Image (tube, rainbow, N blue to C red; front, side, top):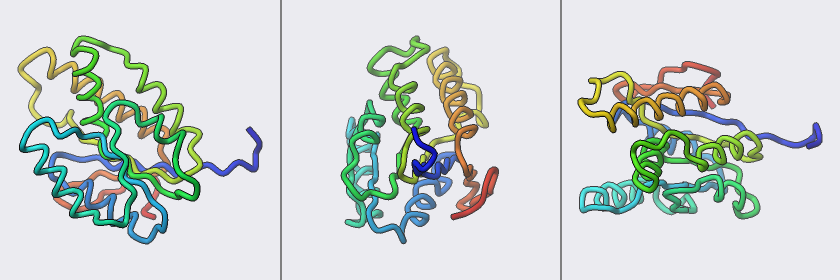
Length: 181
């Protein structure tokens, strides 16, 4: 890899449920011309179908939407020409998909290693949305605690790689690392 290779900026947007993470990511991307929304959610029930439809309406037609519930690295490696920004929304939904596929007791998912590798070499800017799941009540079951632990480690790993880390609290961005775009 030559030193003239452009690397994209990585921004991690984290926070609790309904804290404004996705809205912040969308607003941060508004001025970009060619952008992708990489959606990890699957319409597994009526509530998720409603949420997915609401998110589609919120982002409008400004984004090329690519739905990939299991292998976002594949998408990052095969982006259409000219894309300059990708929003990945969201890591914790993706992790839930992986746990559903492989089983809740699984510790290592090959897709996670692939994703970490893909974001490190990405030439487009990335905004990665995730839930902060470690600040609430400790789950009352082993599967829930396992999910929380894996999500926490994944978030910490990506925060370490990221140029910017934003914590959303009650709809307000708190800069943890880097600065606003």
